[in-house]
Image (tube, rainbow, N blue to C red):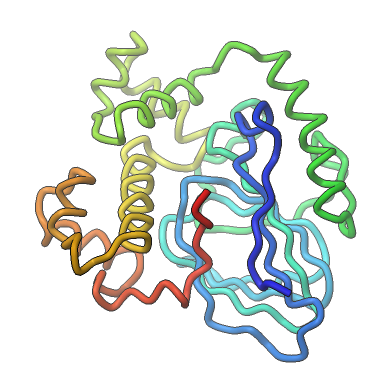
Length: 264
């Protein structure tokens, strides 16, 4: 049994759902503790089965027993302890997905977790659903949503511009490209995501740097190279930003302590 696994939705559904990932200690007899998760610019729906999972964000400690939880955007590393006989299945939603449902105001909701009633979700899932069943439910729902909303809304357009510009773009450049005021874009983005546009860009840049570190031979690729490639001012600037999120320097970073995305 793998503690961490990833499962992928259809190509059309990927417009809104990045993936499903699982933390499975369901047949374990001991506590798995002090594992870490990094911010990634996504929302997460966590389905907890079994005893409980304990999550420490920069704002609070959450004891998550059986149920479904909405996890906001995280801006710092998160510590996770998984009780034995517990499995957590996590649906990772792109940052713009919640903007498809304008009744949600997330402007003051970051680094937080909220238990929700499954009936509140626009798609119907059961707490004990297997991954295969979840994939079918998500594909059915989001493929139809993608067809109904073929035109991208403002939040998705902002994120697309950032992605295409390799995260090296200012809010003023985004506003010029979308022919909209910076203030209006900032307000819309904050309501839909809980983040400022600048903070979202920083998170993406940070995660890209970490992925590069994990997948690179650091004897050949120096920290200066990673800093310059990811548009940090210099190595010192990169190290400072890295410590802001992880509370450690890049050279102290231990990938085995983290749940990191598998290379696809």
